[in-house]
Every structure is written in structure tokens, then in C-alpha cells.
Image (cartoon, rainbow, N blue to C red; front, side):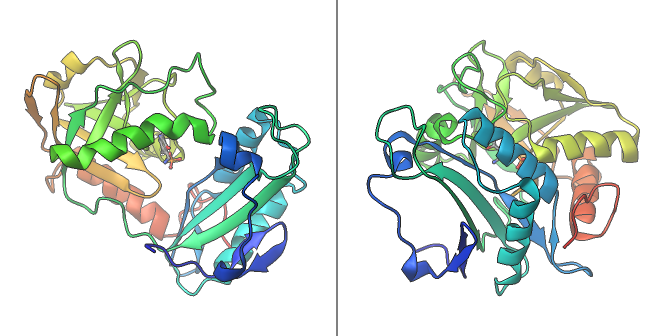
Length: 304
Ligand code: PMP
């Protein structure tokens, strides 16, 4: 067991790890009909601070609406439930995982009529990938085509190719994969958004096949507010990787992860100086870390 959870919140009741019960004939187990969020909370002077809780719960409810889930709770109630679950945990820098899923009551593909269940757990999970600059390989597997599903939702089916890609990566000796979209443009990592820097210009793939990350939006705001740089959102082709001098991934769990190299299928390597102390990536990474661990009201929209 690599995680240890304190109490789990399910439909207003707290249950212990050993007392959880979910039926083998839950709709979600058979058809992946669940939606989820990753939220991080930090230990600050106003302990504990849940970063962008409202934005995450908005996205959770959007994802649930895509699956036409009739949740019996309001957004405010789910935010309160997250806060209560955090309060019952015994650590102060963990992750919160709310999920909403179709339970028992229906076994056809169309889940209408199955019970909608809401569960919130918290667990310890260190900063993903740490602080070192990572080596990345462009995967042959493509990011899911937005004409086949809703890419703005965190619905589980969107992640089956992410799982396949993640199973492969360590065999090749790289730290992470980078996925192209079905039109051969750069998309994202299976679970993170990506940024590139060329001189004073900053680029990130436009919204199409990528998840509109909450960290991505925060980083775009930080570039504008702190460095007076407007981030350009557009299609980026792999050939352009030659032009960039820095690159980094962003995600709630990882914050900002500098990229050292990207290798394509012909084994050509691109070296970036993203990890250097004087790099723009390092500056933006520090700004981000400061706003998640300090109380900057411009960025924090929920304090518990
Ligand atoms: N892209 C994908 C596919 C993701 O699953 C995630 C979250 N794990 C992200 C980007 C980053 O999203 P956020 O910044 O909201 O955590």
C-alpha cells in the first residue's frame, strides 16, 4: 500500500479505510463513469490553505455535468466537505481527491438511474518529480482527439492513453513522456501542461486537446502580473523545439518542473537551461511556490 488515508468522506459520512464498501457491480467499475480532481493543500500561517479550491470544485462540477450526474450536493457543500476532510487528516501538506461516480442500479452503458456517489479522500504524496530538471521523450501515442470526448472535463476515460503511456516510460530511461495531438502539434504530458520560453517570449499550446489546467491559468497570470509578459497560446510544432531555450511542465502536484531535454523518435536531443538559478523558469517557479505557500489574496480564492 503506497498511500495511507485518514478518514474518507462519503455522502456526508466519514468512514475508516477498513470500513469502505463499494459494490462489484457499480457502473463505474465496468464503464469508467467517474470524474475527479487533484487538489493540494499547504501548511501556512493560516493553516491549512487549500489552493484554488473553488476553481477545482467548479471543474469537478463541470466534469459531472458532462456525464449528466445528478449530484445531491452543492458546490459550497462539497467545498465544506473538503475542508472537513482536511481537518480530520493528521498532516498538513497532503492532496485532496474528490470523485463523483455512478454506483449501483444500472448496468447498461447509459448510467441514468444509477446512484451517484461522492467521495473525498486525502493522502500524502510528495512533490511529484522533485525539483530536478527532467529528460522527456515524445511518445508515439497521441493525446486523445477532442472530437471524441470532452477535453475540458476530468473524466476517467480521457486517461486510458495516459495510463498506457505511463506504463512505458521507465522502460526507456526517460523521466516523462510528451504527447503530440492527432494533428502532430505539441499537446501536454499525460497529466501536466507545458510552457516554452524563447528570449522574452513565452508560449504554451492553445486549448484544444489539452486539459485547461488550473496551474496553467495561474502561471499565465503570474507571467503577466509579475514579469509583464503576455503568454502566447498557439499551436506549437515539434520542429520549433530547436528555437526554445527553456521548457517546463506545470501541474497542481508538481508545481513547476523544469525540462532538461526533449528527445524525439529520431533520438535528437534538445538541451534547455530551465533548471538554472537565473532562468525565467526558476523565477516563475519561485513566484508560484510563494503564492501557494503564502497568503496572496490575488491568487488564493479559498482559505479555510
Ligand atoms: N493535463 C492533464 C491531462 C491533467 O490530468 C492535469 C491534472 N493532473 C493537468 C493537465 C494539470 O491540471 P491542474 O493544473 O489543474 O492540476
